[in-house]
Length: 203
View 1 (cartoon, one colour):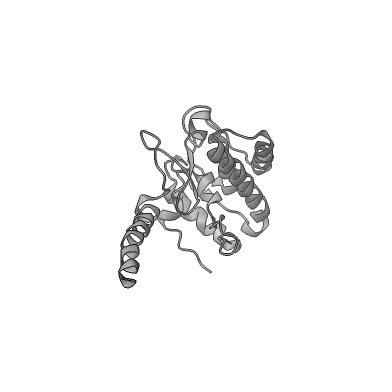
View 2 (spheres, helix red, strand yellow):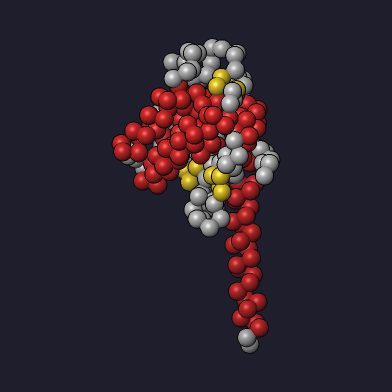
């Protein structure tokens, strides 16, 4: 199934979190599905991410040489990131046992990366050339290990996606207020108005 890589799909606030969120409904074993099950979607995601993550990527585009060949490493890094960042968001600290697979997967993703990384500011700055998707994913994940960023990772109260809370007071609970926030508001509204109606039918 072809995916519409709309702005909502990039509600994570960082490339690594957007990729983690390509597994939908992780908290529902009966409904969960993987948007990267079709390797072709990796290339399409990368194209959309080049636009929607332009600020993080410092304007560089993402390049996918062979999605089918690279899928296993991309998925391995995605799953390691999801486990570590989800646990950190839930507990308020990073588990060493979960961090080790992230670092190993990042190292594998960076093996063939021949570019240089900026040491301060934007890690993708200093070059205008395309960057390999795997390498960009690893760089994004590593940048989230900075304490001030790690402390801002949240789990959406509606869809359970991971997102980086950039609000001033760090109080966001939805990955996307226009989607998940409104859905929860609608549920609460329905619940408030549904209960009296049921009671009236039994009078």
